[in-house]
Image 1 (cartoon, protein in one colour):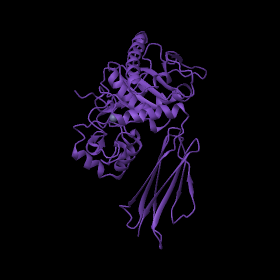
Image 2 (cartoon, helix red, strand yellow; image 1 turned 135 degrees about the vertical axis):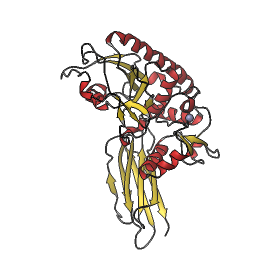
Image 3 (spheres, helix red, strand yellow; image 1 turned 60 degrees about the vertical axis):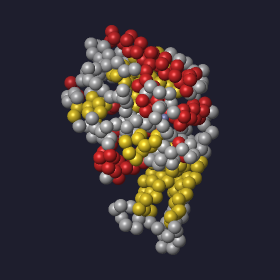
Image 4 (cartoon, protein in one colour; image 1 turned 90 degrees about the vertical axis):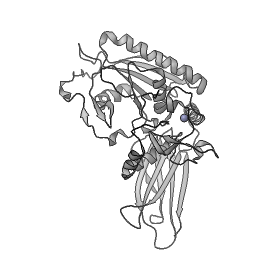
Length: 385
Ligand SMILES: [Zn+2]
């Protein structure tokens, strides 16, 4: 049976359709006090706190006297996760730090711990109350890699996890009655930046062609495939290991996106990771442990502009687990290197611009991506006249 798993891609691009709780003002007010910090309990303490992966659990919609159940549920998921990772990604478990955040001191006296509002976005229930979380996040949750929100409401949410490369912190949302397989799948997104390898009925051919009609969606899909180690829009991608062809169906789409094979944590939640995902996870652990010796990933795409004939749209994408420091760009028109610092120090960064072919000579674009450790990768695309 297909597990209800999903990664929410580019949330900012979705408009809320119908709030589950329309009246936000009616929500219980969180107490605000400058000197207050929530209690944080830590469970697995890695000796190297700088390099360990920090996972924080936050209760959402649990009543005060129900908090021990919240802790039990999450400890079971975490136990299952470390057991399977000991087989699939050796070296990860000793680097995990788990914390349980107790917001009781900040919550209303008689209410839920972190009451919230939910909405439907593209048929998927997600939290809209990110603002509310963010109010608490900067000081208290800022040091965590992954924040797992455990939702305990009668509304059926769909579990989801943001991809690790969005920034320095991912958010996973779980239902309180969910299980360790779903939890491990969502951590596949949140810790390793892996994409979904399953397809869905509602993502049929029609849906693919509908999204492809919008450049924005198309770019978002391209970028997601570029950054994720386990999926590609190209069946012969080197990601699948040389000669091997990818299997069609990934990222929710039945057509046009490819994965390594049938069985994988990122496909059904029950299977072990496929070799591609396993390799990506191991690389992530190695990068964190060795403070990264790897060069950033650097990608260029030059395509004819659909709106301005004769011009080309240019997309530069960079990725590094240490964070992208800058992207440098050179074209015949500019001749000089232009440096673009990314909008933030996220692991992934993109740059869109347009270029015109020179009057004489061929069009080329060179890009250099630099990570925060100063490692560089350069890439060049030539377009013969
Ligand atoms: Zn996989």
